[in-house]
View 1 (cartoon, rainbow, N blue to C red):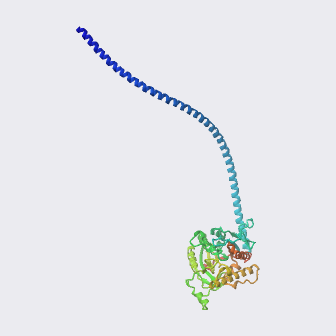
View 2 (tube, rainbow, N blue to C red; view 1 turned 45 degrees about the horizontal axis):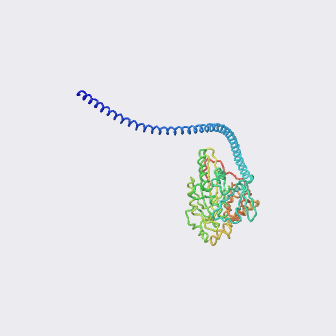
View 3 (cartoon, one colour; view 1 turned 120 degrees about the vertical axis):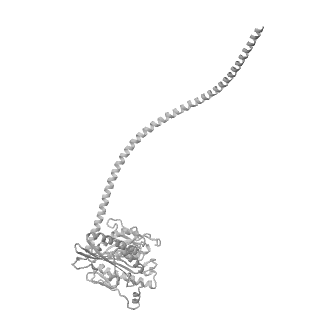
Length: 494
Protein backbone atom coordinates (compact mmCIF):
# COMPACT_ATOMS: atom_id res chain seq x y z
CA UNK A 1 0.00 0.00 0.00
CA UNK A 2 2.84 2.37 0.86
CA UNK A 3 4.36 1.70 -2.53
CA UNK A 4 1.08 2.36 -4.26
CA UNK A 5 0.67 5.58 -2.37
CA UNK A 6 4.14 6.57 -3.39
CA UNK A 7 3.35 5.77 -7.03
CA UNK A 8 0.05 7.64 -6.77
CA UNK A 9 1.85 10.66 -5.43
CA UNK A 10 4.36 10.42 -8.23
CA UNK A 11 1.53 10.22 -10.74
CA UNK A 12 -0.11 13.24 -9.13
CA UNK A 13 3.12 15.19 -9.31
CA UNK A 14 3.55 14.20 -12.96
CA UNK A 15 -0.06 15.25 -13.61
CA UNK A 16 0.51 18.65 -11.98
CA UNK A 17 3.66 19.06 -13.97
CA UNK A 18 1.81 18.18 -17.16
CA UNK A 19 -0.99 20.62 -16.26
CA UNK A 20 1.55 23.34 -15.82
CA UNK A 21 3.03 22.53 -19.21
CA UNK A 22 -0.48 22.48 -20.73
CA UNK A 23 -1.22 25.87 -19.22
CA UNK A 24 2.09 27.22 -20.51
CA UNK A 25 1.43 25.78 -23.94
CA UNK A 26 -2.14 27.14 -23.87
CA UNK A 27 -0.75 30.56 -23.06
CA UNK A 28 1.70 30.24 -25.94
CA UNK A 29 -1.11 29.11 -28.27
CA UNK A 30 -3.17 32.14 -27.29
CA UNK A 31 -0.14 34.30 -27.83
CA UNK A 32 0.53 32.73 -31.22
CA UNK A 33 -3.13 33.17 -32.15
CA UNK A 34 -2.89 36.86 -31.30
CA UNK A 35 0.32 37.14 -33.32
CA UNK A 36 -1.34 35.35 -36.20
CA UNK A 37 -4.26 37.81 -36.15
CA UNK A 38 -1.82 40.72 -36.22
CA UNK A 39 0.19 39.06 -38.98
CA UNK A 40 -2.96 38.53 -41.02
CA UNK A 41 -3.89 42.20 -40.52
CA UNK A 42 -0.40 43.29 -41.52
CA UNK A 43 -0.51 40.92 -44.46
CA UNK A 44 -3.79 42.47 -45.55
CA UNK A 45 -2.25 45.96 -45.25
CA UNK A 46 0.83 44.86 -47.16
CA UNK A 47 -1.37 43.28 -49.81
CA UNK A 48 -3.37 46.49 -50.14
CA UNK A 49 -0.19 48.56 -50.36
CA UNK A 50 1.25 46.10 -52.83
CA UNK A 51 -1.85 46.43 -54.97
CA UNK A 52 -1.65 50.22 -54.75
CA UNK A 53 2.04 50.17 -55.70
CA UNK A 54 1.34 47.84 -58.59
CA UNK A 55 -1.42 50.17 -59.80
CA UNK A 56 0.87 53.17 -59.41
CA UNK A 57 3.65 51.33 -61.16
CA UNK A 58 1.35 50.57 -64.05
CA UNK A 59 0.26 54.22 -64.17
CA UNK A 60 3.85 55.45 -64.06
CA UNK A 61 4.78 52.92 -66.70
CA UNK A 62 2.07 54.40 -68.91
CA UNK A 63 3.34 57.91 -68.11
CA UNK A 64 6.90 56.83 -68.92
CA UNK A 65 5.74 55.48 -72.25
CA UNK A 66 3.85 58.73 -72.91
CA UNK A 67 6.86 60.81 -71.92
CA UNK A 68 9.13 58.62 -74.03
CA UNK A 69 6.83 59.25 -76.96
CA UNK A 70 6.84 62.99 -76.19
CA UNK A 71 10.63 62.90 -75.84
CA UNK A 72 10.93 61.19 -79.19
CA UNK A 73 8.65 63.83 -80.75
CA UNK A 74 10.62 66.61 -79.01
CA UNK A 75 13.90 65.15 -80.27
CA UNK A 76 12.51 65.12 -83.79
CA UNK A 77 11.33 68.70 -83.37
CA UNK A 78 14.72 69.67 -81.93
CA UNK A 79 16.45 68.11 -84.90
CA UNK A 80 14.12 70.01 -87.21
CA UNK A 81 14.67 73.21 -85.17
CA UNK A 82 18.41 72.66 -85.29
CA UNK A 83 18.21 72.36 -89.05
CA UNK A 84 15.98 75.43 -89.19
CA UNK A 85 18.35 77.33 -86.88
CA UNK A 86 21.26 76.37 -89.08
CA UNK A 87 19.38 77.63 -92.12
CA UNK A 88 18.41 80.79 -90.22
CA UNK A 89 21.99 81.29 -89.05
CA UNK A 90 23.24 80.87 -92.58
CA UNK A 91 20.62 83.30 -93.83
CA UNK A 92 21.49 85.70 -90.98
CA UNK A 93 25.18 85.58 -91.88
CA UNK A 94 24.28 86.27 -95.49
CA UNK A 95 22.02 89.18 -94.50
CA UNK A 96 24.66 90.47 -92.09
CA UNK A 97 27.23 90.40 -94.86
CA UNK A 98 24.82 92.28 -97.11
CA UNK A 99 24.15 94.83 -94.33
CA UNK A 100 27.88 95.23 -93.67
CA UNK A 101 28.47 95.79 -97.36
CA UNK A 102 25.64 98.32 -97.51
CA UNK A 103 26.88 100.09 -94.37
CA UNK A 104 30.36 100.22 -95.81
CA UNK A 105 28.99 101.66 -99.04
CA UNK A 106 26.87 104.09 -97.01
CA UNK A 107 29.89 105.22 -95.00
CA UNK A 108 31.87 105.67 -98.20
CA UNK A 109 29.00 107.65 -99.68
CA UNK A 110 28.69 109.78 -96.53
CA UNK A 111 32.44 110.43 -96.54
CA UNK A 112 32.22 111.41 -100.19
CA UNK A 113 29.31 113.71 -99.36
CA UNK A 114 31.25 115.26 -96.48
CA UNK A 115 34.37 115.65 -98.60
CA UNK A 116 32.24 117.02 -101.41
CA UNK A 117 30.61 119.50 -99.04
CA UNK A 118 34.02 120.54 -97.70
CA UNK A 119 35.26 121.01 -101.26
CA UNK A 120 32.10 122.93 -102.14
CA UNK A 121 32.58 125.23 -99.14
CA UNK A 122 36.26 125.66 -99.92
CA UNK A 123 35.56 126.51 -103.55
CA UNK A 124 32.65 128.71 -102.54
CA UNK A 125 34.81 130.60 -100.05
CA UNK A 126 37.59 130.87 -102.62
CA UNK A 127 35.14 132.32 -105.13
CA UNK A 128 33.83 134.75 -102.52
CA UNK A 129 37.36 135.81 -101.60
CA UNK A 130 38.27 136.26 -105.25
CA UNK A 131 35.11 138.29 -105.78
CA UNK A 132 35.54 140.05 -102.45
CA UNK A 133 32.00 139.29 -101.28
CA UNK A 134 30.76 139.69 -97.74
CA UNK A 135 29.74 136.28 -96.50
CA UNK A 136 26.38 136.00 -94.78
CA UNK A 137 25.26 133.35 -92.31
CA UNK A 138 21.63 133.27 -91.23
CA UNK A 139 20.68 131.95 -87.79
CA UNK A 140 17.10 131.37 -86.66
CA UNK A 141 16.54 131.26 -82.92
CA UNK A 142 14.09 128.78 -81.33
CA UNK A 143 10.52 129.74 -80.55
CA UNK A 144 10.21 131.08 -77.01
CA UNK A 145 7.26 130.67 -74.60
CA UNK A 146 6.44 134.38 -74.93
CA UNK A 147 6.31 134.24 -78.74
CA UNK A 148 2.85 134.56 -80.26
CA UNK A 149 1.77 131.47 -82.20
CA UNK A 150 -0.94 133.39 -84.03
CA UNK A 151 -3.26 132.03 -86.69
CA UNK A 152 -0.58 131.83 -89.38
CA UNK A 153 1.36 129.00 -87.72
CA UNK A 154 5.00 128.64 -88.70
CA UNK A 155 6.24 131.43 -90.94
CA UNK A 156 9.76 130.07 -91.52
CA UNK A 157 10.66 126.89 -93.39
CA UNK A 158 13.78 125.42 -94.94
CA UNK A 159 13.98 124.07 -98.51
CA UNK A 160 15.25 120.51 -98.90
CA UNK A 161 16.50 120.68 -102.48
CA UNK A 162 20.14 119.80 -103.06
CA UNK A 163 20.98 123.34 -104.17
CA UNK A 164 19.41 125.03 -101.14
CA UNK A 165 19.93 122.41 -98.43
CA UNK A 166 21.57 124.09 -95.44
CA UNK A 167 21.71 127.40 -97.30
CA UNK A 168 18.10 128.32 -98.01
CA UNK A 169 15.33 129.83 -95.92
CA UNK A 170 11.71 130.61 -96.80
CA UNK A 171 9.61 133.22 -95.01
CA UNK A 172 5.84 133.50 -95.40
CA UNK A 173 4.57 137.03 -94.93
CA UNK A 174 0.95 138.04 -95.62
CA UNK A 175 0.37 134.81 -97.53
CA UNK A 176 3.38 135.27 -99.81
CA UNK A 177 6.51 133.12 -99.68
CA UNK A 178 9.87 134.87 -99.86
CA UNK A 179 12.91 132.68 -100.55
CA UNK A 180 16.49 133.55 -99.68
CA UNK A 181 19.81 131.77 -100.08
CA UNK A 182 22.90 132.56 -98.01
CA UNK A 183 26.30 130.99 -97.44
CA UNK A 184 24.91 129.05 -94.48
CA UNK A 185 21.59 128.82 -92.66
CA UNK A 186 21.49 127.59 -89.07
CA UNK A 187 18.19 126.18 -87.90
CA UNK A 188 16.94 126.65 -84.30
CA UNK A 189 18.51 123.39 -83.11
CA UNK A 190 22.03 124.45 -84.13
CA UNK A 191 24.34 124.59 -81.10
CA UNK A 192 26.90 127.29 -80.37
CA UNK A 193 29.61 124.75 -81.20
CA UNK A 194 27.99 123.98 -84.59
CA UNK A 195 27.94 127.68 -85.43
CA UNK A 196 31.52 128.32 -84.35
CA UNK A 197 32.90 125.41 -86.39
CA UNK A 198 31.72 127.20 -89.53
CA UNK A 199 33.64 130.41 -88.72
CA UNK A 200 36.70 128.91 -87.04
CA UNK A 201 38.81 129.09 -90.21
CA UNK A 202 37.83 132.72 -90.66
CA UNK A 203 38.97 133.46 -87.11
CA UNK A 204 42.23 131.64 -87.87
CA UNK A 205 42.83 134.13 -90.70
CA UNK A 206 43.45 136.88 -88.13
CA UNK A 207 46.52 134.98 -86.90
CA UNK A 208 47.64 134.64 -90.50
CA UNK A 209 47.75 138.42 -90.91
CA UNK A 210 44.30 139.26 -92.28
CA UNK A 211 41.77 141.79 -91.10
CA UNK A 212 38.68 139.84 -90.09
CA UNK A 213 35.30 141.28 -89.23
CA UNK A 214 32.29 139.33 -87.97
CA UNK A 215 29.14 141.21 -87.01
CA UNK A 216 25.63 140.22 -85.96
CA UNK A 217 22.61 142.03 -87.39
CA UNK A 218 18.91 141.61 -86.68
CA UNK A 219 15.89 142.91 -84.88
CA UNK A 220 15.69 143.19 -81.11
CA UNK A 221 15.29 139.78 -79.47
CA UNK A 222 16.49 137.75 -82.45
CA UNK A 223 19.53 136.27 -80.66
CA UNK A 224 22.44 138.49 -81.74
CA UNK A 225 24.00 138.90 -78.30
CA UNK A 226 23.47 135.20 -77.55
CA UNK A 227 25.26 134.32 -80.80
CA UNK A 228 28.18 136.65 -80.13
CA UNK A 229 28.52 136.44 -76.33
CA UNK A 230 26.55 133.35 -75.32
CA UNK A 231 24.99 132.74 -71.92
CA UNK A 232 27.14 133.58 -68.85
CA UNK A 233 28.00 130.65 -66.61
CA UNK A 234 27.17 128.00 -69.21
CA UNK A 235 30.30 126.62 -70.98
CA UNK A 236 28.25 124.78 -73.63
CA UNK A 237 26.53 128.03 -74.58
CA UNK A 238 29.57 130.24 -74.96
CA UNK A 239 29.25 132.60 -77.89
CA UNK A 240 31.48 133.28 -80.87
CA UNK A 241 33.61 135.88 -79.10
CA UNK A 242 34.82 133.68 -76.19
CA UNK A 243 35.19 130.66 -78.49
CA UNK A 244 37.21 132.70 -81.01
CA UNK A 245 39.54 133.87 -78.28
CA UNK A 246 40.06 130.35 -76.95
CA UNK A 247 40.95 129.15 -80.45
CA UNK A 248 43.34 132.02 -81.10
CA UNK A 249 45.27 131.54 -77.87
CA UNK A 250 45.37 127.76 -78.32
CA UNK A 251 46.65 128.16 -81.88
CA UNK A 252 49.20 130.74 -80.75
CA UNK A 253 50.53 128.18 -78.28
CA UNK A 254 50.86 125.49 -80.96
CA UNK A 255 52.57 127.88 -83.40
CA UNK A 256 55.38 128.56 -80.93
CA UNK A 257 57.02 125.30 -82.01
CA UNK A 258 57.24 126.76 -85.53
CA UNK A 259 59.07 129.84 -84.31
CA UNK A 260 56.09 132.22 -84.08
CA UNK A 261 55.69 134.73 -81.29
CA UNK A 262 52.57 136.85 -80.95
CA UNK A 263 51.58 139.95 -79.06
CA UNK A 264 47.92 140.80 -78.69
CA UNK A 265 45.97 143.86 -77.63
CA UNK A 266 42.28 144.22 -76.87
CA UNK A 267 39.94 147.18 -76.97
CA UNK A 268 36.18 147.34 -76.50
CA UNK A 269 33.80 150.17 -77.20
CA UNK A 270 30.14 150.84 -77.72
CA UNK A 271 28.41 153.37 -79.94
CA UNK A 272 25.51 154.76 -77.95
CA UNK A 273 23.36 157.58 -79.36
CA UNK A 274 26.11 158.29 -81.92
CA UNK A 275 28.63 158.64 -79.08
CA UNK A 276 31.63 156.36 -78.61
CA UNK A 277 32.06 154.93 -75.12
CA UNK A 278 35.22 153.23 -73.93
CA UNK A 279 34.04 150.07 -72.14
CA UNK A 280 37.47 149.39 -70.63
CA UNK A 281 37.93 152.87 -69.23
CA UNK A 282 38.50 153.12 -65.49
CA UNK A 283 36.08 156.06 -65.51
CA UNK A 284 32.97 153.92 -65.10
CA UNK A 285 30.60 156.87 -64.66
CA UNK A 286 31.16 158.15 -68.21
CA UNK A 287 31.29 161.68 -66.91
CA UNK A 288 33.30 162.65 -69.98
CA UNK A 289 30.39 161.64 -72.21
CA UNK A 290 27.81 163.48 -70.13
CA UNK A 291 29.93 166.63 -70.16
CA UNK A 292 30.19 166.42 -73.92
CA UNK A 293 26.47 165.92 -74.29
CA UNK A 294 25.82 168.94 -72.07
CA UNK A 295 28.00 171.12 -74.25
CA UNK A 296 31.14 170.87 -72.14
CA UNK A 297 34.23 169.60 -73.81
CA UNK A 298 35.12 166.11 -72.61
CA UNK A 299 37.14 163.20 -73.93
CA UNK A 300 36.62 162.95 -77.69
CA UNK A 301 37.02 159.52 -79.29
CA UNK A 302 37.94 160.23 -82.91
CA UNK A 303 37.91 157.46 -85.54
CA UNK A 304 40.94 157.45 -87.84
CA UNK A 305 41.97 155.22 -90.74
CA UNK A 306 45.62 154.95 -91.79
CA UNK A 307 47.04 154.29 -95.25
CA UNK A 308 47.13 150.53 -94.61
CA UNK A 309 43.41 150.40 -93.90
CA UNK A 310 43.87 150.02 -90.16
CA UNK A 311 41.36 151.75 -87.90
CA UNK A 312 42.19 153.54 -84.66
CA UNK A 313 40.07 155.33 -82.09
CA UNK A 314 41.94 158.06 -80.25
CA UNK A 315 42.17 157.89 -76.44
CA UNK A 316 40.64 154.42 -76.45
CA UNK A 317 41.89 152.07 -73.73
CA UNK A 318 44.03 149.27 -75.21
CA UNK A 319 45.05 146.34 -72.99
CA UNK A 320 47.85 143.85 -73.61
CA UNK A 321 46.52 140.32 -73.13
CA UNK A 322 48.28 136.98 -72.80
CA UNK A 323 45.47 134.48 -72.28
CA UNK A 324 41.80 133.94 -73.02
CA UNK A 325 41.12 134.15 -69.28
CA UNK A 326 42.40 137.73 -69.22
CA UNK A 327 40.13 138.61 -72.13
CA UNK A 328 37.16 136.94 -70.42
CA UNK A 329 37.72 139.17 -67.42
CA UNK A 330 37.75 142.23 -69.70
CA UNK A 331 34.58 141.01 -71.43
CA UNK A 332 32.84 140.77 -68.08
CA UNK A 333 34.01 144.28 -67.26
CA UNK A 334 32.70 145.55 -70.59
CA UNK A 335 29.37 143.75 -70.16
CA UNK A 336 28.80 145.55 -66.86
CA UNK A 337 29.45 148.88 -68.57
CA UNK A 338 27.39 148.27 -71.70
CA UNK A 339 24.10 150.10 -72.18
CA UNK A 340 21.09 147.81 -71.97
CA UNK A 341 17.43 148.52 -71.40
CA UNK A 342 14.00 146.97 -71.35
CA UNK A 343 11.64 147.32 -74.31
CA UNK A 344 8.42 145.60 -75.27
CA UNK A 345 10.46 143.51 -77.70
CA UNK A 346 13.16 142.35 -75.28
CA UNK A 347 13.61 142.28 -71.49
CA UNK A 348 17.40 142.94 -71.78
CA UNK A 349 17.86 144.78 -75.06
CA UNK A 350 21.30 146.01 -76.13
CA UNK A 351 20.88 149.74 -76.66
CA UNK A 352 24.26 150.22 -78.32
CA UNK A 353 26.59 148.74 -80.93
CA UNK A 354 29.32 146.70 -79.21
CA UNK A 355 32.71 146.49 -80.97
CA UNK A 356 35.39 144.07 -79.74
CA UNK A 357 38.80 144.44 -81.40
CA UNK A 358 41.78 142.12 -81.03
CA UNK A 359 44.98 143.32 -82.69
CA UNK A 360 47.49 140.59 -83.40
CA UNK A 361 51.15 141.11 -84.23
CA UNK A 362 53.32 138.10 -84.89
CA UNK A 363 56.92 137.49 -85.85
CA UNK A 364 58.70 134.31 -86.85
CA UNK A 365 62.23 134.32 -85.45
CA UNK A 366 63.51 131.77 -87.96
CA UNK A 367 61.98 133.21 -91.16
CA UNK A 368 61.92 136.84 -89.94
CA UNK A 369 58.40 137.10 -91.30
CA UNK A 370 55.97 139.51 -89.65
CA UNK A 371 52.18 139.46 -89.73
CA UNK A 372 49.64 141.94 -88.42
CA UNK A 373 46.05 140.82 -88.12
CA UNK A 374 42.91 142.32 -86.67
CA UNK A 375 39.82 140.53 -85.42
CA UNK A 376 36.70 142.69 -85.11
CA UNK A 377 33.69 141.04 -83.48
CA UNK A 378 30.62 143.25 -83.41
CA UNK A 379 27.22 142.91 -81.76
CA UNK A 380 24.97 145.51 -83.37
CA UNK A 381 22.06 147.02 -81.49
CA UNK A 382 18.70 145.56 -82.44
CA UNK A 383 16.52 147.19 -85.04
CA UNK A 384 12.86 147.65 -84.09
CA UNK A 385 9.87 149.65 -85.14
CA UNK A 386 9.00 152.54 -82.85
CA UNK A 387 5.39 151.38 -82.71
CA UNK A 388 6.40 147.94 -81.41
CA UNK A 389 9.26 148.94 -79.12
CA UNK A 390 7.07 150.85 -76.68
CA UNK A 391 9.94 153.28 -76.15
CA UNK A 392 9.38 156.71 -74.60
CA UNK A 393 11.65 159.51 -73.43
CA UNK A 394 15.33 158.52 -73.42
CA UNK A 395 14.46 155.03 -74.68
CA UNK A 396 12.71 156.64 -77.66
CA UNK A 397 15.83 158.69 -78.43
CA UNK A 398 17.94 155.53 -78.15
CA UNK A 399 15.68 153.65 -80.55
CA UNK A 400 15.70 156.53 -83.03
CA UNK A 401 19.51 156.74 -82.85
CA UNK A 402 19.84 152.98 -83.35
CA UNK A 403 17.49 153.01 -86.32
CA UNK A 404 19.31 155.98 -87.89
CA UNK A 405 22.63 154.21 -87.43
CA UNK A 406 21.34 150.99 -88.99
CA UNK A 407 19.70 153.01 -91.76
CA UNK A 408 23.12 154.53 -92.51
CA UNK A 409 24.51 151.00 -92.65
CA UNK A 410 21.78 150.11 -95.16
CA UNK A 411 22.67 153.17 -97.26
CA UNK A 412 26.31 152.06 -97.34
CA UNK A 413 25.36 148.52 -98.35
CA UNK A 414 23.03 149.75 -101.09
CA UNK A 415 25.74 152.06 -102.43
CA UNK A 416 28.27 149.22 -102.42
CA UNK A 417 25.81 146.91 -104.17
CA UNK A 418 25.25 149.51 -106.89
CA UNK A 419 29.02 150.17 -107.10
CA UNK A 420 28.46 153.89 -106.66
CA UNK A 421 31.44 156.21 -106.68
CA UNK A 422 30.56 157.77 -103.34
CA UNK A 423 29.93 155.48 -100.39
CA UNK A 424 28.40 157.39 -97.41
CA UNK A 425 30.62 155.87 -94.72
CA UNK A 426 30.72 159.13 -92.75
CA UNK A 427 26.96 159.28 -92.23
CA UNK A 428 27.29 157.55 -88.86
CA UNK A 429 29.93 156.55 -86.34
CA UNK A 430 29.11 152.88 -86.98
CA UNK A 431 29.61 152.95 -90.74
CA UNK A 432 32.75 155.05 -90.46
CA UNK A 433 34.18 152.61 -87.92
CA UNK A 434 33.27 149.68 -90.19
CA UNK A 435 34.65 151.32 -93.34
CA UNK A 436 37.71 148.99 -93.61
CA UNK A 437 35.44 145.98 -93.08
CA UNK A 438 32.84 147.03 -95.66
CA UNK A 439 34.95 148.81 -98.22
CA UNK A 440 38.48 147.55 -97.78
CA UNK A 441 40.48 144.34 -97.93
CA UNK A 442 38.93 142.63 -94.93
CA UNK A 443 37.45 139.16 -94.64
CA UNK A 444 33.95 140.07 -93.53
CA UNK A 445 31.07 137.89 -92.41
CA UNK A 446 27.64 138.97 -91.26
CA UNK A 447 25.27 136.97 -89.09
CA UNK A 448 21.67 137.86 -89.77
CA UNK A 449 19.69 136.72 -86.74
CA UNK A 450 16.02 135.99 -87.32
CA UNK A 451 13.11 135.46 -84.94
CA UNK A 452 10.57 132.74 -85.88
CA UNK A 453 7.84 134.64 -84.01
CA UNK A 454 4.97 135.16 -86.51
CA UNK A 455 4.36 138.64 -85.10
CA UNK A 456 7.92 139.57 -86.13
CA UNK A 457 7.49 138.47 -89.74
CA UNK A 458 7.78 142.00 -91.12
CA UNK A 459 11.04 142.74 -89.29
CA UNK A 460 12.41 139.30 -90.22
CA UNK A 461 11.66 139.95 -93.89
CA UNK A 462 13.46 143.31 -93.73
CA UNK A 463 16.47 141.65 -92.08
CA UNK A 464 16.63 138.89 -94.70
CA UNK A 465 16.32 141.35 -97.58
CA UNK A 466 19.10 143.46 -96.09
CA UNK A 467 21.26 140.35 -95.63
CA UNK A 468 20.70 139.35 -99.26
CA UNK A 469 21.96 142.76 -100.38
CA UNK A 470 24.97 142.43 -98.09
CA UNK A 471 25.73 139.00 -99.55
CA UNK A 472 25.81 140.51 -103.03
CA UNK A 473 28.30 143.24 -102.12
CA UNK A 474 31.85 142.98 -103.45
CA UNK A 475 34.23 144.86 -101.18
CA UNK A 476 37.60 143.81 -102.55
CA UNK A 477 39.95 140.87 -102.29
CA UNK A 478 41.25 140.30 -98.73
CA UNK A 479 44.90 141.25 -98.40
CA UNK A 480 47.29 139.67 -95.94
CA UNK A 481 49.39 142.13 -93.93
CA UNK A 482 52.85 140.60 -93.88
CA UNK A 483 56.40 141.73 -94.40
CA UNK A 484 59.97 140.71 -93.62
CA UNK A 485 61.32 142.03 -90.34
CA UNK A 486 64.30 144.33 -90.50
CA UNK A 487 67.20 143.77 -88.15
CA UNK A 488 66.06 146.36 -85.62
CA UNK A 489 62.30 146.17 -86.09
CA UNK A 490 59.89 145.38 -83.28
CA UNK A 491 56.38 144.10 -83.06
CA UNK A 492 54.01 146.86 -83.97
CA UNK A 493 50.29 147.29 -84.05
CA UNK A 494 50.41 150.09 -86.54
